[in-house]
Image (cartoon, rainbow, N blue to C red; front, side):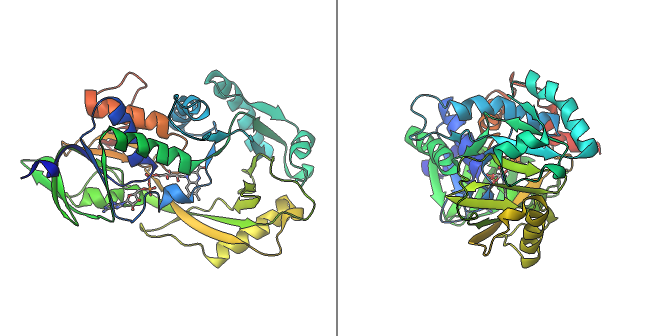
Length: 377
Ligand SMILES: Cc1cc2nc3c(=O)[nH]c(=O)nc-3n(C[C@H](O)[C@H](O)[C@H](O)COP(=O)(O)OP(=O)(O)OC[C@H]3O[C@@H](n4cnc5c(N)ncnc54)[C@H](O)[C@@H]3O)c2cc1C
């Protein structure tokens, strides 16, 4: 075998997960890395289709921890990391009604303790921030003024630029076809242009991560891709929307936010489906308009200017799956990012690189992320 087909690590998938891991591995000195991506460009799937926000709130404690650990990097990236700011702090406003509001209020001390800047707003204070809201629709809101929109393109390409300068190779348009297992250990893979061997094979294949693992036999990790839809539209004439926070109503399952001079909205849909190039359907688009009618009738658009859908891929407990496969040495999971893969990428990339290079990390208890956690279920 020639030297070019032997690597320290091979990463399958060039979305935010694969790119961030390559960056953090390279920063720690592992630069003999190959990233294989089936599409002709990075971020064609989930990473390029997200709502692109940092929200330091989550029902899953491990995911919340990862968001809080990542926020500093996203607000103040290391010197020389990027050419433009990653985070635009237009804020996040989350509306609640009834019992959900009581639960949200109880969660505030935990969020504050973790370092999130979060305020409680009355319905009329929420309306003063986003004047199209109807005060009778909510009991109150949480406001996170330091969070907001992420420039995913800038973040992804900054990770990749640094990793490639350090020596990482990226092969686009090259699909992984098989996993090579020898004496019970993963030692490489077969792909479109040949066979590659490595000390570690990293599964960062997003919605396809389950299929990649299945190439080496059955697994105790089960992942479900779920579709989420976004539409864009023009704001009503005369309304200045560009400085609005992303506004989410968890009682009516809707969020909307400024997007490229207009607005975008999502009905927070979660239809499970097989991994695919996800497309929006008409019914879900109609549902989005219906929910806008209830929550912010002034925003109901005359026309939808754009629409797209992407897959958010979840483990059964909705936490990420990061670590070596307990049944297949040399095979490393970096999957199950669900709806938070962009905003958690700094912490998750660092943790994954620690686990690959040291076999452990001091950054947090990784038991709740471990692929082995499903073995006893
Ligand atoms: C509508 C929507 C809104 C979202 N909003 C947010 C948000 O506001 N904030 C946030 O943090 N996250 C958000 N997310 C979630 C976020 O987009 C994902 O968690 C994240 O992009 C997952 O990244 P990934 O690299 O794991 O997957 P992907 O970006 O899907 O990358 C996986 C890559 O693996 C490649 N691949 C698969 N199989 C193979 C193979 N056999 N060979 C080679 N390559 C292969 C694929 O082509 C793909 O490019 C949202 C997602 C959606 C859909």
